[in-house]
Amino acid sequence: MRFGGLAAVNNVSVSVPRGEIRAIIGPNGAGKSTFFNCVTGVLRPTGGRVLLDGEDVAGLPPNRISRKGIARSYQITNILPGATVLENVRIAAQSRQHGWSLLSHHRAFGDLIDRARSVLEAVALREKEDELAANLSHGEQRNLEIGIALATEPRLLCLDEPTAGMSVTETHATVGLIRRIAHDVTILIVEHDMDVVMGLARTITVLHYGEVLAEGTPAEIQDNPRVQEVYLKT
Amino acid sequence: MIARRSPTAYWTGFAVVLALLAIAPLVLPEFWRRFVTEILIWGLLAMSSDILIGYTGMVSFGHSVFFGLGIYGAAAALLSVKPPNLWLALLYGLTAAGTAAVFVAYFSTRLRDIYFAITTLVFSQIFYVIIFTWTAVTGGENGLTFAQPLLSLPGLGAARFTPETLHWFVLGVVTVSYLLLRRITQSPFGMVLQSIRENEPRTRAIGYAVERYKIVAVMLSGLFAGLAGVLYAVQNKFAAPDFVFFAVSGEVVIFNVMGGMGTLVGPVAGAAFFLLLREGVSRYFTEYYLIPVGIIFTAMVIFMPQGLLGFAKRRLNE
Image (cartoon, rainbow over all chains, first blue to last red; front, side, top):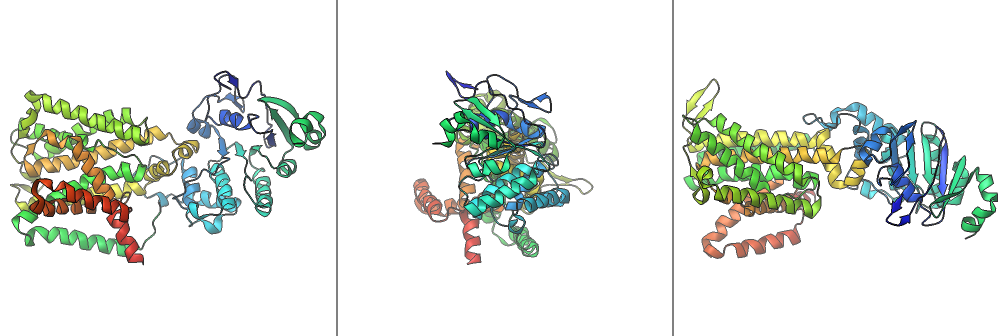
């Protein structure tokens, strides 16, 4: 991916086996977010491919990417603040069906509400379903963020710093939550918190200046001298 | 987004207001009878724009186009077909407004926020100039006058409109439109529009083709605005380019802001308030009536930003 003369992400090849939790780490400006934006259709890559189960989805707009089965959460909380918690998730579940129904009440589609509630159950927000999303705590909004992504029933879930700004307790809870949902979906996670990454990921890819610096298990990455040099020591 | 209030209270309020509006022409003097009918028509126009302004978060300055084409479309039917037929006027008016809406929607919905507003305003002026200058067809500056059609109801025969039956006819159309619009705003489709208002990029990211939803929203909104135009044509028996002028669009936005956006009923209340205010004030200030109206409007925006309806709701809850 190039922005004018700057190659933000270059020659990065990451392949994630189905069912794995893969972490992408790297110092600020390493290209992690750009990489994410290419995968999820926010940016159209200037070269390269994004293969999802063998199908190239590179360059499709975000709504098409979503329908192909890639969902994402955002580094900066990105929810529907004026809607209830339930509606935030319900509208995401509705994106696959009934979206063009004009003359029936949205609450008439019980299947969508059931699915939304089971997602809220998974992200521990079931009790708060009638609250306005804007009134949730920061940590709860971060989890709602994951819930919205999950409700679209993705094959690949991309989490952009899911624990950003969370307290230690909240971080711990969210790590447990991600581990639970990982049973059903492949997860790609960008994270700054090393404890989170080391605890969750089976494989870690380290980006540096837009290129892959290293790839391996958490233990290998921790022992890699080049990684220590650019990242872990600072 | 999901306002859960007691349905019994809602339907009771609905029935009371409907009953009051239904008996209005029987008790009001001639001038005010006509005035209430007109408020209903402007209220429908305001409601139609609320779909965009309040529910989808797109401020349209082009509703005069759809309203005006509803009037001219009805005029075309009433002038060209003898004897003038009410339902044909409706068909022509809706077709004209709907066609314009498709056109405007296609070009304007790619843009957001102020760019959308400006584009709709530009379309409003384009249509104004076309209608103003194409004298052979539209009558130009002088507009068109035509005969009022008979009130023909299938199975009930036809009769001339009296002020009462005209009022009831308008009330019926506006009520059905309100119920339809209300249902649309609560439908899965309506929830997508509100999701777009809340967070457009997020709505796209969860899989919605946002542009298509916006196009349909503009078309629906335009159709109901056209319906208001047809009613206006039937009531007033003339069409004039002034109704296509963007000042009308501006007034529609004011109705929304005054009454409370995103409530459907609010814009109707806003229209009623604005028209009554203008009527009252212009009796004392004659040609300078816009100055006090403007001051009151500014004060309302500052002190009740939620509009009349939001203000009343908050008062009731306190």
